[in-house]
Length: 430
Ligand code: RAT
Ligand code: ZN
Image 1 (cartoon, protein in one colour):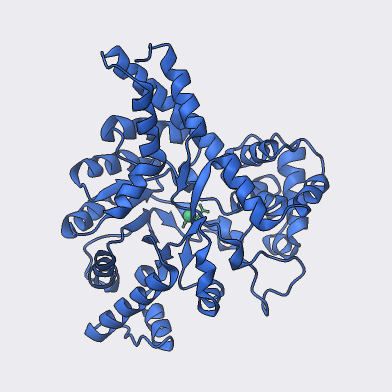
Image 2 (image 1 turned 30 degrees about the vertical axis):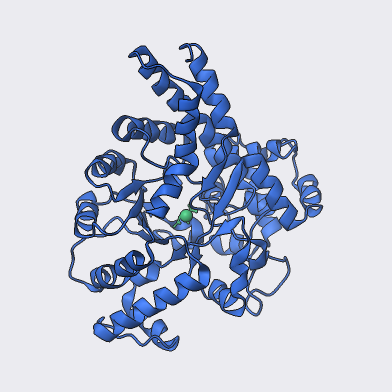
């Protein structure tokens, strides 16, 4: 049994070395290719595994931030997008890191990453870092980043309607075989743009009509089965807008009820819903142009109640939805709440959400995923999240000890393993 004084240090020690399954990233195995500068991406689509300092510094979270310092009235969006990636990175470094204090969470992330890789993050130019990264080999570097961040398994996001990625799977299904990476079949257009998808499915020999009739439903199910097998997907996923409602009696509901959820049940796979992203409120910012909005949890509850045979991973983007989401998880055992997504992946909000989840759900949730788009980001996303989750958990163990609980190291170890790995593995297994 630990004394109250020993608890915080024990929790921090265990959290610091805990192995992690990262359940949602946008990272890829090296078999998906890496971008090569100077190549014509119209004729030769860019590789998908992003890593290195130029990618780190041009992360879309930082693109949004640099346009606050150098607004589009001074540097038009088109001009920024015409620059090469290293030129964009130099521009961002100069304005966000050299001329201003880099204290936003996305800026701090770059500092933490460089420091933990053994580099001094105070350079005035990016050239030293570029030299260092040029000496790394992609596959060995993945091992190194996984080792530093303590991540033992990376979950990819594999959008089946993205032509670049789709072609790679079709050309060589073995690209999914790297044991460090697992695939997730991402299907947004299926629920967000059915008529367009129906035309694509028809082109790909799964005939479907603009109004989903019985034949379209069967063919769409075949399409999903085909891709689940090809990718060896471990779950299916979608991101939905704040105004998503259920029931609605539209094509999206038909596809959800009659295609997606039955196929998930057939393969015993959970369905992940990430709700609250209002896409492209400023399309000139490209990937950085999406916004958050409040979503409707009554609709989520309707889905959970209507489909007790399915399991759902759910995360929401609006801070205002977090409490209601926790309460929904108390009502429905087929809901696993996960992660502090995107605009909620900031220390103050992670702290608040994690505290709320422990208080309402005990240890039955998945506190975080990285959402890393650039391999190196695993280092900072997990360094920062481990710290906050560890602090909150230490407080909760101290509170329980003060209420009379005999807290042991084994109890702390089991709890932390559940949070960072076990809850995910068990929910996947069903
Ligand atoms: O966090 C992000 O990078 C977002 O742009 C999205 O990719 C989001 O995480 C998603 O998966 O839709
Ligand atoms: Zn994501």
